[in-house]
Length: 87
Image (cartoon, rainbow, N blue to C red):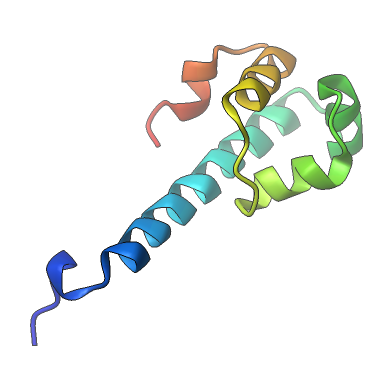
């Protein structure tokens, strides 16, 4: 039996792709944060976010807005584009 994207509900296919991107984005944020030797709490304070929000981003369960992505990037001392490179 062959499975194609057309045999899967488009809603489920899109959600799995978005989740995958969210997880990869969160991993990038965590990697860069740790590279600056910041705890989640220190990083959240630097961003002006709650620690649980940062945790959710890093786990891929939160979907940050464009302005939140810009704040993350500035706090990590990188461009917003750098957060998405290779994802």
